[in-house]
Image 1 (spheres, rainbow, N blue to C red):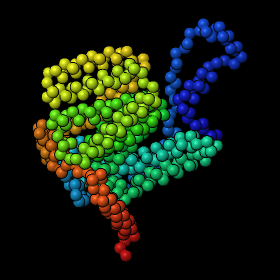
Image 2: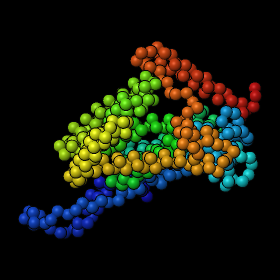
Image 3: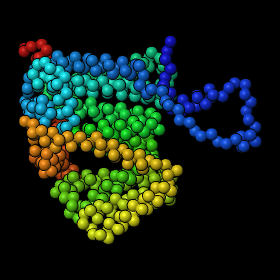
Image 4: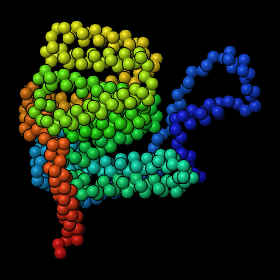
Length: 463
């Protein structure tokens, strides 16, 4: 007997209301309908998003990828960062900047809970589990996403039952195996490194985001997504670049939420420009290419806010609320940057206006509060960086940068020992950008072929 598909929250609510109406009951007259008080809308809990088929795909993919990783696991220390990362894990210390606090805690648990073999092997097992979970979580996402995609295409709605389950399982399994046995992912999941665990963490972000899109009234999953995204920032700071993609996904699911998100981006953009003009934020002065990218993102955010304000038919009171938000934060940035006492007074006045318009528009929607809560959740996840000064107080053998002091913490957090980011200026030097892109593709191709040859040699022997 075939199982029914999980329906959307709206259809579940409709079915509940239909079932609640007893058969044979006469419909009320128009007069009675007018006299009756409107019933408050009830929120029905939706059925589970992920089906048994999806979880089977997750389990099979995770298991098969982990078996492959375990059989090819590095038996000892390898090159590059392996030694200092293993030492940092064993003593729950502080590896090289930016410190990787959540990864360090995670791998330290493996050194304690797996009391066999050497320390590097135990940490590598933890990485293998993280890589296998990343592949399995992607399989879970693709399996359920394939079903949702088929439900949205008219010509594919007729496919149901076993055929649909088979298509979803195969698509999810193939996606998981592709990332699991991708050359780079495989090579980093069998040694002491940080990347596989970072990918698994980011997959949790996407899972929570999909769960919120499935039932937007259950905002706890959106908050969880931003907590995990904050943890991603502690694992590898480059993952912050995914923020714009996450914001676009949220905006597509909820136009009002997207409006508030891009408003926040726009306010941050203007506040940063103010701090730059006051010579407080000097990072943008030192790198022209970064400043160009910063301006592009800021201008696109302003355009997106204007577009979503039109789509959502924002009222005058809501515009006043948005203006109060912008005025409060920009004036606070100006006052903080040395603008003088007068700007502190103006900022306090803007905050009063913010409270006033926030109260007046409370019945129109509180998406701005949800966005604020998402920001708080991200900070909560990223606050694991404060593990570094705490760990430094125990004086572990691996304590890179001495982050127990304020100067050491800033040095570690900002990766002070590394050179600053210097993106190629595509506007003024496009030939260099094209040449670098070609070099990247060429090196990736040769590296992939080298990894394939090395795996064949390891399996079949030389010759």
